[in-house]
Amino acid sequence: MRPPLKDFAYRKLKYKKALKIIPNLKRLIEEFRRSGLPVVYVNDSHLPVDPFLKKYEDDEVCRQGA
Image 1 (tube, rainbow, N blue to C red):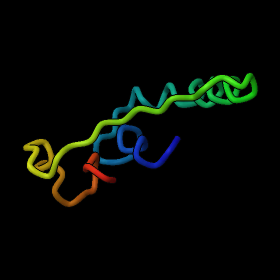
Image 2 (image 1 turned 135 degrees about the horizontal axis):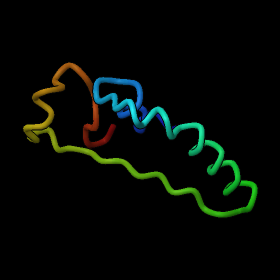
Image 3 (image 1 turned 180 degrees about the vertical axis):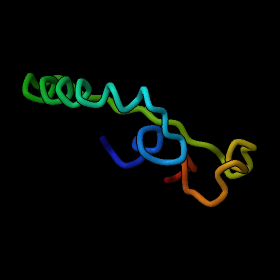
């Protein structure tokens, strides 16, 4: 997994169910790469004025440009 996506698995936004799917995601990513199929990553970001970020002021979680 790419670093920005780790916030939901390992950092302050940790969601335990996310950890359960990581092995299958890794397997699927490798299968897609071997087959020459595209692998698409998604993430979210927040503007500095987003109230959501007040909860995570000490972190660089999901900040625009991160």
